[in-house]
Image 1 (cartoon, rainbow, N blue to C red):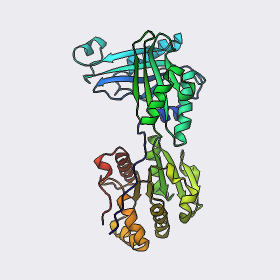
Image 2: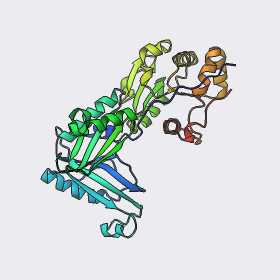
Image 3: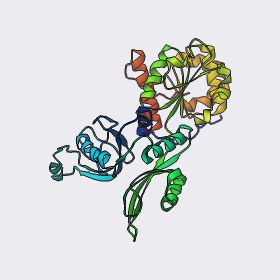
Image 4: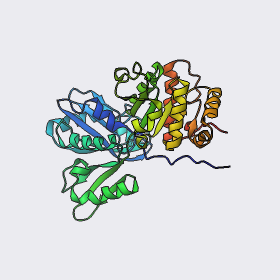
Length: 360
């Protein structure tokens, strides 16, 4: 009997704070500051590379803690906006030192945060937009945060604007597919965080029925890229799926209509049996993406499998159905939560993402 193995998982980044900032107001006029976690120790709410924007009016987008540090960060951010000078601040919430900050978080962790001006056409905003443009196209890139230096200006650099001294570190991060810390204690001391940025998740939804709107909304709330495809003009309406790419195409032309190489996961949910069979046939032949979710009961899959024949055997190692974690979902919104949660768990290689794989 032929043994079929699922394709390897594509590199993906689940921390989409970069995309949330790009979508949430980085282009708007007015003063603002960008706060980036560049180093951590112990238990912290967010890890290196997490970002938030702090506006001139004191409002903010994103979080670096559960609310413990934001009030103090706003004070530093205001000073940075007024002076135009980038700075790094440290918080140590381990043991009695926490009392000195007056925070009382009890998180038993430490965090170093780089705070820099982030006006719409400033260097930080341009660096983030450069990186976002690359990852939105499905390719990896790097952002480099220089948070201590007697030579280079402190701040965030994209690969395109990177000083020569840090270029080799960024190249190595891209080759290895991992972030790294640069510490140079020589005659020109420097500390920098080189953040490897894989593309954010790209979810393909086959079927644009009313319940697909809730799935798109849940995925877009996480700043995932989403593509929706349907053969019905009345359903394939971009206005119903804000932030998603909507494609009108027959199911049998899926591989031509969508670049499956750039998709991390797909959910088949057209509620149209013939279309679902064609979608799954195309996905089986293409051999990707590595996660395929199918809406509907096991009995429906058995009927589809009979139509697919040997293609069903090739698809089984990748297929999750009924798609979604069993949370007792009743409403479209809860079903969407169950689906997106399972995809998230699978992308993160957590057991919650593996629980519903269809067996033989």
